[in-house]
Image 1 (cartoon, rainbow, N blue to C red):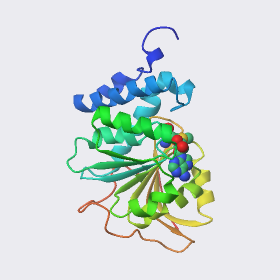
Image 2: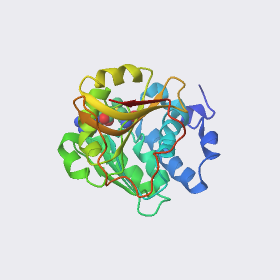
Image 3: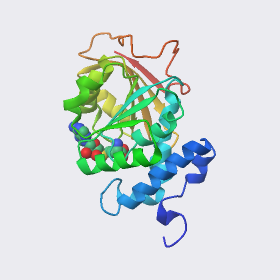
Image 4: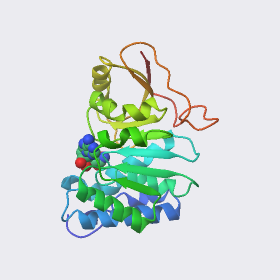
Length: 245
Ligand SMILES: C[S@@+](CC[C@H](N)C(=O)[O-])C[C@H]1O[C@@H](n2cnc3c(N)ncnc32)[C@H](O)[C@@H]1O
């Protein structure tokens, strides 16, 4: 498409402008503009999705904040790539005193982008240019939420997120149309306390919310500690499915 909004990836921005503060929109715009600029030299998102950057990536990431409590948060995003969902969530966390986002990304060029975006948008972010396996044990204590989008199929994803889930973090994992099958695969080696919720950005997508995970098939309870005091539930509306065992 020549000219117009779609060429610079701003289609869908208006819809998001209607649901976030002016300050958050400003931070998101800084991130999106930098991504469009860096995308010329680094593959931060699939090129075909760039015209739909706001709806397909920003909006898809933004919905995650509705699944967690409105209290100070320590959030860790694994395999952040071009900043989804980590940078987008951090743009919202910037309005919450004491909240902080940790982004883990092993690709050093993508990590450089994440650092520059966080600096320009003035986000409460620490970027870890490292493999998840190397930093998870050190980062896990006190983490309220661990997220990952398009990182790995669920069984592998649970392996990577295990230190965070064991420390009491809620897992938020956007999944596609194969979410049910991934859950079935994961159930062969994990016992999960989880909900599968609808995605607001993708009719076929699901948000997998994991409250607890244990290797094996016996009953599990998440450890206490990291979840915010007084939190009744992770919020975000009625679950589409609940699994235990
Ligand atoms: C398919 S991309 C998804 C990026 C982003 N989450 C998104 O949804 O657009 C997966 C990212 O995870 C990173 N990654 C994969 N395995 C990793 C690991 N073990 N440790 C750290 N980063 C990893 C890759 O470098 C890549 O940037």
